[in-house]
Amino acid sequence: MKIPVQFTVNGEQHTLDLDPRASVLDTLRDRLGVTSVKKGCDHGQCGACTVLAGGRRVLACLCLAASYDGADIVTSEGLGSVGNLHPMQQAFLDHDGFQCGYCTPGQICSAVGALQELAEGMPSHVTPDVREAPEFTDAELRERLSGNLCRCGAYVNIVAAVREAGQAEQAQVVRPLPVASGVNV
Image (cartoon, rainbow, N blue to C red; front, side):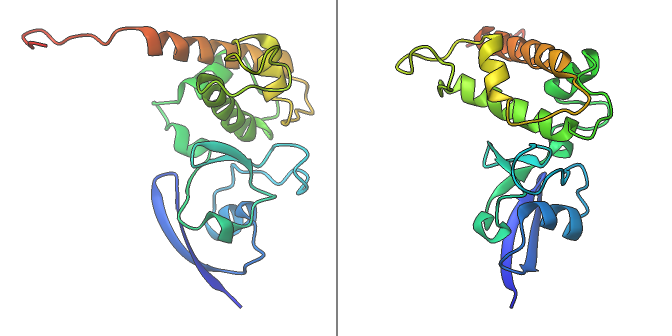
């Protein structure tokens, strides 16, 4: 038995007839050819399959594709493009936040989602007072990225990359927008 499922992947809409047991991971890789999403453990323990669904990070190996009917899914390819990288992708390059590269797409999607959670004031297990907005600290970053494993041990560089991208994002939020000359505001 197959069921029709529609979702948008990296800005492109897809309608597929899927087995109701198909995971988002298998659908992305096997049906849509999106191979940046990795099958590391297939049990939700490594984070290599992390994607953004509706702006939230999810483990694609644990998600049934049918549950994401109508969803907007973004993988690392959808964050930027050649010559126009997402700030997180650029920070990973600048800080050597990868070695073999297998976990990198999931790490990047997780980092983008983690910064979004921080920006929205979502506490984590290391937030000292959950009634207050969490602070942008290395402890917060490490906790939020703890669901993504890197066998090569590039963690120090990954945290440095996420810190840099996060600081740039915070600066962008508070920086006033430039006013074009000749425009009355």
